[in-house]
Structure formats: structure tokens, C-alpha cells
Length: 341
Ligand SMILES: [Cu+2]
Image (cartoon, rainbow, N blue to C red; front, side, top):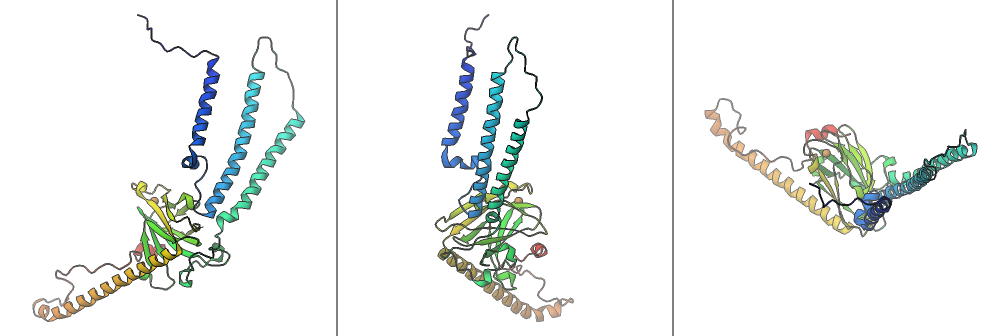
């Protein structure tokens, strides 16, 4: 039995037209998809000057690459068509073309030179922190805990935050310059920062290798146990909002859940947030202190009772009293102490 409903093959002549049309349609679709697809072509940016410069550098290199691609493949397709096999055609036998060879060597060298110059021109702005804006958060001296001048903005002032990766969360500590690490403001999973302010990060890990990356705020930084890596960002004033990222190094079975968020707020909102955090810590510390005092009082009362019964004399350590609260600050853990500089 013969099938009568076969789809006819496109004619030979229609094939190149079809290919060209579909390529054009795909290109148009991707181009017109607009800002939502911007990250398809280039790294995300817009949240910090260093991310913007990474974007610029990428775009320049990409554009040069596109020009080279078009030239090389244009020449290739031209040669394939123009010099394709024909009955009786014999290829010209030649040896070398000095001008052409010097030309493409010099051309390639020039391309490398241009890319090198552009890269080295943009690199300092990507690596080195910028000063805060005049309307940024006035950083109190106690929060300027980054000491290495090579990692600071030119004016030497940054809000320094400890970023600690652990399976499977990011923990942010805002050291306040004193030796008491239990009274430092801590945030988990969401870092809160003021806009218009130079933020420097000390990136560490408590366990395995992680990678800190909020694409709109700059490049990726490894978080490794035993090392401290550094990066920075400055969210422009007026660009308040939430910037999201993801641990960018496979760190275990829940790696996919290790998201990261930076919430940029106005300098005034940040002042209020920080004050609230400090107040909460203070209240928690006072609560713990009151609890300890009460426990001590109860233990002392219990001494006469246990003295006539128990021979051990370890008054107050047993019994059914609930466990004392842990320290007010989850930062003060042993593993963290080990990973400090
Ligand atoms: Cu991780």
C-alpha cells in the first residue's frame, strides 16, 4: 500500500532560503526579547560599578569576536561557493603569499593588543573599591574594619562585612570594631546594605568550598576554608532593592538551596535597621543574663537539699532545669573562630 499523505520535501532552491529565514527569525527573537534576555548576551550588571565595567569589558570583547566571526565565516562561505568543484576546473597551484601572511599576523597582533589595552584600562575599576557617594551612609569608624589599604577605597572608608559560607547558607556579620564578637550584628541569607556606600566583603567558609556571587553586584569570589578572599560593591543611590544570587560552587547535596540575597536600602533605612538589630541583640543579651542569674539563684537554693541526700555534691548541674540559652549570637561558634584570620 502506498502512503499518499507524505509531506513534500522542500525543493532544493527553497532550502537556503528556509535556513536563512529561520536563522534571522531566531536572531531577531533573541535580540527583541529585550532586557529580560540581556543576560543571555552579556553578564548581568546595574547594581554596582564593578559589575557595569565587567559588562562593558565583556561587550567590547564580544563585539570584536563577532566582527572576526563574520569576517572569517564570510570569507569561508565566499570561498566555498566561488571555488566549488566544477567539471574541468583545476585549482591554481601556488606557494605562499607574503603580503597576506604579514597582514593576518599583524591583524591578529593588533586585535590582541586592543583587547589587552581595554582589559587593563578597565581592570582597576573592577578590582579596586570606589569611594562612597557624599549622600551615602556616613560609616562610623567602628564599622570600618577592613584594614588592608590595598582593599580599601581611595578615601580609606568602607562598611566591611564578613561573608561566611557554610552548608547550606550564607551568614553575614557586621563587625563593630570591639573585641566582643557576641554583640556583632548578624544576618543570615539576606545581607542588608546602604546604597551609595562602599561595601567591602571578607569572604570565608566554615566547611567546604563555596562561591559568593550576586551577578548584578560584580564578579564571583571563592569562599574557602582557611582563606579570606575580598571583593566589593556599591549599589547606586536610587537603586534600592533586592539583588539575588546563588552559591556558585557545588558544595554538597543542598547546594541548589544555598541562595544569596543582598537587600539595598537607603542610608536612613540602614541606620534604622542597624539600630534595631543592635537593640534586639542587647535585649537578648540582657535576657540571657537574667536567665543565668536566676539559674544561679536556684542552684544556690538547691544546695542544702542535695547536701544531705547526694554524695557527689554537684549541686545544680543535674535535675530537670532546661538547658541554658545558647549565646545571643550564632557567629560565636568554634568552627568560625578557627576560620578567622
Ligand atoms: Cu555552597
